[in-house]
Length: 368
Image (cartoon, rainbow, N blue to C red; front, side):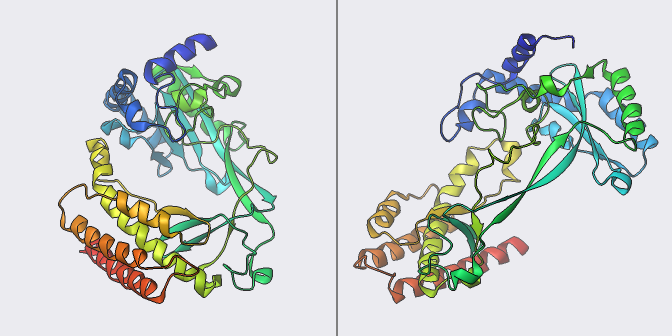
């Protein structure tokens, strides 16, 4: 290693601001406004123009025809990673492709492959269910008969979780390919291989990409945060939630979820335009949303009215105006409800009709 650990951390801190945006939710917008992030984006764009990279890819593609896949096409827009990434597909003999990653922030590269293992655990006293295109996290037992029909038969007692992680030890079948490409990398970029005992060192005061505070490692910062660099410990793996199929839900819980789904659709529609505007221009076209919400399995009149009152239109698009009209209709229905037990049939019928028309229209717009 030509750098000490302190020197490597110094390189990291040139591109990732220390202590910035580290909150319970991670303030990505605050991170994007820093000098360090601007330097990282500039490094990515500059790296995408480096002819050494493109020439080396051509040589490797000639040596391993129909086996190479470039994972760094996004660098031209300045997004993601601190490295060049490509894989060589050797799955016919080994089961997994070989990953090659070359940092353009520091003179190091790595070679690895993916492994999987399974953990069997008792689920948490909560469960998830997908309902009308939205994932609901329910903070009650999957054995609760108020929510789930025939829970003794349909609800799982254990959950098997499959986890992927990185392995740096290569098989005899992989080694010749790895050696040939390693020579190409070293000859092209003058870099050396970073050993796992260095790359897996934690960097607790930065939050690259998908990592949470305290999770980032040197590999995440200098290469990519898209891999699990250390095999997870079964004892440290959090208990998973059981998954319950929509067909197993009771009628009364379906009624609750129908109203909640309509409520959240209105809220997301009103917030989405402003959320997209906060994204960098390069990310707006590919922006997507994953809808999820938490519930205790009940409707709460005061909470719903409070959330509906906070909803404000963020622009004057036809879609936003339509959502505002739906918000007022739902608000009136909730206000006239006594707040006891299941939602009234009129509220459920309105929510179901709203979702049917809204989701059908959305599908039509997506295919037109």
